[in-house]
Every structure is written in structure tokens, then in C-alpha cells.
Amino acid sequence: MAATITVPQRLADDVVLIRRDLHMHPELGYKEHRTAGIVADRLRALGYDVHEGVGGTGVVGVIKGVHPGRTIMLRADMDALPIVEERTHTYVSQAHGVMHACGHDGHVAMLLGAAALIADRKDELAGTVCLVFQPAEEGLAGAKAMIDDGLFERFHIERAYGLHLSTKYPAGVLGFREGPMYASSDSIEIDVVGVGGHGSAPHDAVDPIYTAANFITTVQQIVSRHIDPLEPAVVTIGSIHAGTTHNVIPRTCRMLGTVRAFNDSVREAMPERIERVLRSCCDSTGARYDFTYLWRYPVTENDAAQTQYARALATATVGEHMVVDASMLMGAEDFSFFAQRVPACFYTLGASGGPETSHPHHSSLFDIDEAALPNGVAMMAALAFNAPRNAP
Ligand SMILES: [Zn+2]
Ligand SMILES: [Zn+2]
Image (cartoon, rainbow, N blue to C red; front, side, top):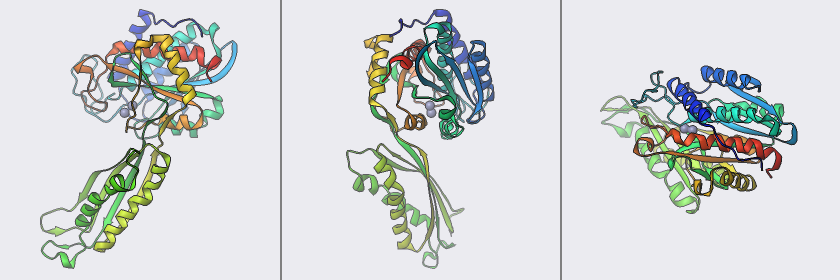
């Protein structure tokens, strides 16, 4: 392994400044123009070969070592969320209704910090390191957009690493998990189509609200009765819209939902299972339906050998007392698309320093303890200096 990584105070301070600037100027998925511009400028100033506009607003910075080795990618996502920030700190969002409420500002800042450390000691570098700043992680599959734009073919990436800040863990603690770590996430869209009529005469109508209500109740039997109790799965109807007033049976009822799983066979059986319940509910009342199943993010699956390697590297870099087992989450990550292509490890970086920095991700009160950032920088730099040379 290369020499230990230390993050100088000046660099740590700079990472905080970058993070706060990005926090004040959050941008939604595929609109990260300012963020991508800052990333590209900084990388260019550090001597990276910079490729902009990859998969929309994505940026790739490439640095080649003098020693032989593999090509690896280190990933940061750049997008924010459509949330009105309710914090009152000095670096509160200046873009009303847009907020870095998932910590992606920190991800970008840390990878730029690591970029500086890597460039500083370029003569120790082996192989090729690609710093991948991706757009639109929050539901719009920016990772897939970069892959579809030829990321792997253009840069010949052989290994992938990425991290997510997490307010579930103490600041600076690195968490690892082999195998499935985050769930798959898919969407369902349903229109139940009945026959409208007078609220006093249901026998002359086909009631889509009643039909939808049956479906919402019955669809839970998929998780409780059809799936192995040892396999996690969730079906949630998150939105239902129908009708206009007290005494009218409307013609249609629209439902939107999310489906989560941790196992490909469970996931792949979901559309059929859900539609079967929907069909039977509609058959029993005489309603029709339109059913759309939207495949979104696959399970985020960590390669066992890469995870063992990264965990050992983390122990050497930040100390054993700062490394823990990460738990599985029903949340989803589009890093999963990278992990489908090459052996990969996605890990968490604790960001909680007390009640103020323990709010859940996507909360309007979300914030991180910036004391977490140096360990994130150090781990990314450690991967850059070591993984091209000796990762499995
Ligand atoms: Zn998020
Ligand atoms: Zn996120």
C-alpha cells in the first residue's frame, strides 16, 4: 500500500468552503450546470484531462499514473432535491425550493478534495483514475445516462467505488457491506377506469374508488402472503386521485406507487403479481385498468472481494475504530448501474455529530457534520493510490 493519506487542514477547510458554496447554490437533476462548471474548472486547474457533458451534465476527470495498473472510477453525484430548506445557518440554499438534502454537495466537495491530494502526489499513482461526477441521482438515473453515453467504453473503467454520507452513523465512520446494500426501486402507475354516475345510484355506475380501495388493501398480500418472509419487499401506494365532490361517482381513479426488493427474482415477479391483484379487483367490479410498471434502479450489490479490499484499506487509512458494518436499506441508489458493469464497492460515511445533524436524508432540516468530510477525502484518495495497483 502507498504511504498513509493525511488531509492537510488547509485542504479540509477548502472542502468545507466548496461544500457550503454548493449548498447555497443547489441544482436539480440534469440542471447541474453551475456545479459541473466548478468541478470542470477545478479539475482542469489541477491538471486533469476533463470531459464535460457526459450523460447530460456529467463531468469526468482523468489522471494517469506513471506505474502500471488498472483503470478505476471514483464517483460523486451532484444533484439536489425539490425541497424548501428550513435551516437557518449562514450557507442556507439561495435557490428557493431547491435544497441539498441528501448530502450530494458533500460528495462533490470530498471528491474535489481527493482530486487535489491525488494530483499533488501524481508521481506515486499507478494505472488510471477517473473522477466521475454524475448528474441526476435522485430518481432520474444520471448514472445510467453516463453509461448510455459510453462511460465504460470511452474510459475503459474496470472497478468502481462510491460513497454516501449518512446521518444514521457518527461523523467520519466508514461503513461497509458485502452483497446487496440498497434495494431496487421501481414505480407503478395505475388508472382504474369505471363508469361515472350519481352517488345515490352505485348500481348504475362502476365505482373506480371502491375498486381502487380494494386493490390498495389486497395488494399488501403480495408481501405478506406471496413472498418469502425472509426476503425484504415493499409495495407502497403513495398517491391516489379521483373524484370532485360528495355525490358523484367519478369515471377514473389514478394511483402511483413504489416497489422495493432486495432480490432480482422477487423484483422480476412483481409486475405480474401486482397486475394479478389489480385484474381480480377490477374483474369483481367490472372496471377496466391501465397498468404501467416502470423499472427504475436495480439492487445496489457490492462485490465481496472489492468490499473486503476497501474495508481493509479503510481500516489502514482511518483506523479500525472508525470502520463499521453498514446495514441494508430499502432506499435505492443509481450507483447500482455502475456496479452491474464492473466489480464495485459502495460505502457509507457517517455524518451525524448530534441532534442538529441527525435529521433523515430528504428532510427539509437535513444537514451534515462537516467534521466527517476529511475521512471521506482520505478514503477516496486511498482508493486512488492503491486500488489501480492492488485491488482484486
Ligand atoms: Zn437522496
Ligand atoms: Zn443521495
